[in-house]
Length: 157
Image (cartoon, rainbow, N blue to C red; front, side):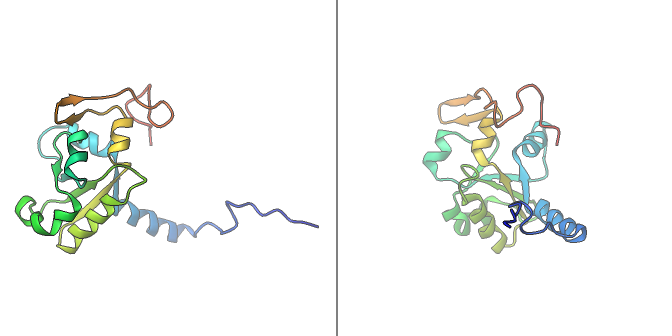
C-alpha cells in the first residue's frame, strides 16, 4: 500500500517555543513596505533612516520619497559620512527576487549600525500604489490587484 505524505507536513512544524523565538527574531531583522509607509506618513522623525541600496540608474528610475541613496558597494566608504550610528537603518533594493538590501544590511551591521531590511523592496512599494520619486518628478501607479490591498489601506495583518 502506498502512503501519500503531505508535503507541507513532511517536516513537522516547530514547537511553539521554537516558533516564538524564530518569528520574534525575524521581526527584529525585517519590516515591510506597509509599516515603513505608515511610519513615514506620520511626518517628522520616523526613528530610522531609509536607505535605497541600488545603483544610481535604478535610483533615478524611481525611489521611495525621503530615502537616502547609498549603493551597497559604497557603504564602507560613505556610511560614516551619511548615517548617524545611533539611528536605526532600514534598507531596500529592487524586490523580493533581489538580495541587495540584505547585502547592504550586512555591510552596515558590520560597521556597527542597527539595521532592518524592508521586505518587498521598491517593487512592492510601487505595487501597493505608494508614491515614488524619479529624476523627472513624482508619481504612483495603480495597485496590482493580486498583490496589494485595493479596497483598504492595508491587508489587515
